[in-house]
Structure formats: structure tokens, C-alpha cells
Image (cartoon, rainbow, N blue to C red; front, side, top):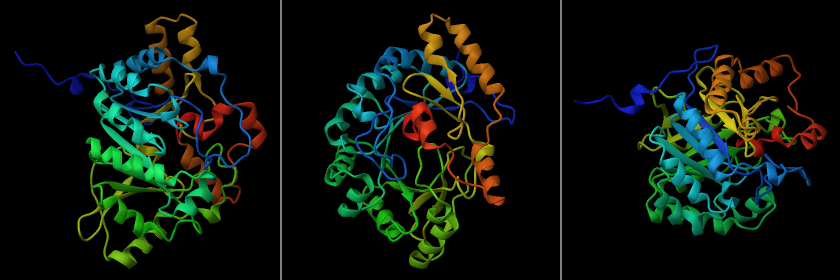
Amino acid sequence: MSTLPLSRERPTVTDTFGRPLRSLRISVTDRCNLRCKYCMPEEEYTWLPRETILSFEEIAALADLFTELGVDKVRLTGGEPLLRKDLSVLMRMLRRNPRINDLALTTNGVLLAEQAQAFYDAGLHRVTVSLDTLKPERFKALTRRDCFRQVLEGIEAAARVGFKGLKFDTVAIRGYNDDELVDLIEYGKGFGGEVRFIEYMDVGGATDWSMDKVLSRAAMLKMLSQHYGPIEQVLEESSAPAQRFALPDGTTFGIIASTTTPFCATCDRSRLTADGMWFLCLYATEGTDLGQLLRAGASREEIKARILAGWQARRDRGAEQRKELERVGIRARLVEIERLRQDPRLEMHTRGG
């Protein structure tokens, strides 16, 4: 007797706007080996206490509860997740969960060359590499680190060991890398990968953000069409953050336009920090401390009930609310520097971007 595929059996938990609980981004560390200006522009940071960082067993236990409530996509993030020792061990643990259909990783690529094979062998499905420029000196200026060569080696290693469908995330900033859009797409072609241009976002930690630095989706499409010719939108049903487009030769690329064209209506993502704080929106300033619940001995059903209640009450539409501020001329920093130092969980690099 045949049975339905597991994906059809999973529950559908929805929030107040009918958005399903489907995607979970898990930060495994708040530390990073780069200091990108759009994410970590300050000289000093307050870090999560090391004793609060969840073990792999604790992460897997929480992920298991989320998947029992409908999550089937998990992405490992940071900070820079490859700074977490033996990350492939966690990947193997998560791959043993049959409800996870898509296990992905976002990395800056600096340490990827030496770990790509272990990740592939552990069963990781997909890799996304942050790649904001192809110019070494520009990379150094942006990140305040001189390791551009290692990033390229990491990308090459990921392709070599067998990862297909590589994605490259590019934060497009006016006056910084807006002259490289074509070059980045051409680079991605060489790996059969897809570039996703991300509008500069005014999230926690983006203390250098200003609207005049935002390169909009409309501006990107205009620049690219001037070079390639007519560009068509790829019509598809998806809750992914990127709106996808096709060039005349069939090459596809994405644009994540959450600053100028928010997609809150279809957002099915939530975020778990490395110490177990669960945030329902990238712009949220308050979360639910699942890590503390777990360590206090709460039962599986108690924690699941907290997750269920949190999602069902979810009203977050952070990017749309930020857009409304722009319309009345008061859009500025999301969180002031002093508050970020008091609560590092408000930093984008702590909650996985």
C-alpha cells in the first residue's frame, strides 16, 4: 500500500496573514572574519557570551520541533558559519531529519575551499556565496580584510566537489559596485550559477545606511537591459525572496528588492540566533528565547506550543513598515549604535541576514 510523500503530510501552520511556517534560518555563530561596511561597519562589537551558544545537539533538537510544525527548508548562516568548528557534523545531524527537504548554507567563502568536500559529503544541498565585487582592492576596502583570493578559491572548490546551482549574493550599493552588475552575471555564468542582487537594507547593524546608497531594482534592471537587451521576469510560484529575471540568452538572475519593493506578503522565513533567540522578521526587535526554554528543561510539547503560538500570532511586515517611514520622510537607522551594543541579538550578523 502506497503512502503520501512526507511533504504532503506536513502540517500547514499559518500566521495572521496566512503565511505558512516553512523556512528557518539558523545562525550557528555571531562571529565573522570580515567587516563588511553594509553589515559590520563599526570598529568594536559586543558578542554573545560563548556559554550561551547552542550545541549542535541543541540546534538539531530545535530544528526537529520546527519541522514537526511544517518547516522543510533550513539554511545555516552566521555571522560567518564556517567559523563554527566541525560544521559538517551539524549538517549530518540535520540531514538525518527526513522532513528537511532543502538544507542550504550561506557563507562569505573565505574558508570554503578547505571545507567544501566535507560539506558535500555530509549531504548539504546548496551553497550561496556572498560576492559583492570582483575587484580585489574594492573587496579589501569593503571588508577591511585582504582575502579575496580565498573567496574565489572557495567558489571554485564548491563547484569542483559537485555542488550544483551555486548562488552568489551581491549587495548592490550605488556608487560602490553598481558598475559591476554585468561582470558579476558573467562570472556566475562560468559556474552555471545565479547571481542575486540585494538592495542595501536598513536592518539592525547597518549603521552606515542611507537611502541615497540604495541601488533600486528598477535602476538595476535599467542598467542590465542597456547592456543585454530586453529582460523578462521569470513567472513562478515561489516564496523565495528573490524575484527572478531572464536575459535574452536564457541566463537567469535574481533581485531581492526588500528596500524599495517589499515582499512581506509571501515571507515564510524566521530566524534562530546562535543562542536560540527566535525572531519572526529580519527587522524584529523582540524575539522568543527558545534556547533558554530548552536549557530550562521545557518539554518538546511545551516548546512546540510556544513556536506554534508565536507563528500564529505573527503580524510582522517589517520591510513594508520601513517603506512607510520613507514615504513620510523619517526613514533612518533601525537601531541606534548604543542599543546594538547592549543587545547584540539586534545585529544582522547575529540573526543570519
